[in-house]
Image (cartoon, rainbow, N blue to C red; front, side, top):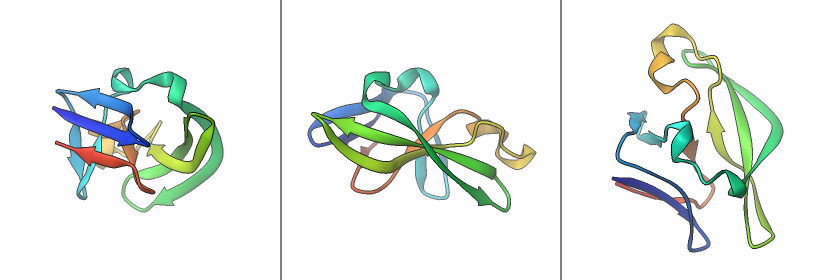
Length: 94
């Protein structure tokens, strides 16, 4: 079981997840969608492709770009298509 939390709020929880470069990637159905807002931020990884971001929101507090995912990853990262990973103070346990 893996769980992502910020400000004592659960953001994602799942028995199924992928680990890539030390980051836990949660499947889309594991997300508590009410805690996410689409961000306009995008970055590029040479082997995974273009990442999109979410802001995490808990009790009105926003953690900008604290979650990212690859909507259309390159073939080498196809196992994490649509899966979400976290940083910026989000605690991930597994």
